[in-house]
Length: 306
Image 1 (cartoon, rainbow, N blue to C red):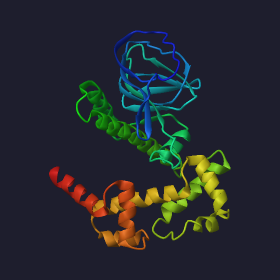
Image 2: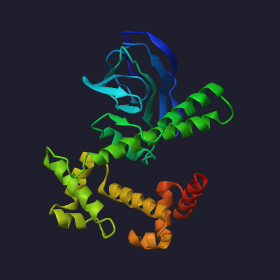
Image 3: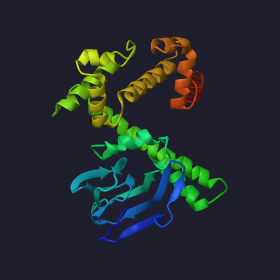
């Protein structure tokens, strides 16, 4: 919906639209321009327009086509669509089973000198090659949470809106990150050398996660300078090699914590941290709780579900 759209078919069953173009709403690291819920009639079309900000759409029901720079993507219930600034954008609801979708138009606040908390997510979004992914993390609840707070307007609603918006952005990132990892699976046939090198880096880290001492080892293995590899990897993925390495280490740490076969100290040693303190500090910074707290939360959740 964001941008100078010309609606060709205005027929809709329901439209809950919140526009802030004249007065964008700042939420720390995010700026909100528009958020809403649109339930279309068959054949509803907004008309091609230039996207003015980032836009995330979540298909609640039905189906239809979204267009990015003239290329069509078929969307169905449970899909997430990401449109980037300055892309040409359009969508058309199916004539028989028209979609209902939630949407949010926003931008990242880059006014601060220091990169904000969403700096990495923004880089990943900008490197996104396929704009559609199936939701695996329950983004529906975050959208409905925002709508509830916008309607109720109770005390602390602004704080709750910010929380739900953060969830939408992060859950979208997680869904696309999962898909991004799948793009470099072993059976993939690569069309260019950069993609092949990227896969080799990913494969080396995944295979040697427990033994890697310094990332410069990858240079020795692949026969390229580390600066060259870093450039290729970042251009292909939006991630630095260090960021990917850290991501895989925390994924493995979470897996080991869930299994409960090793102590936190043993997990720190397995992942080559110098001490349990450095492991706990890094884990809490990235996950939000300490390894011990995470394990306690996970065990409580398992016990409650029995």
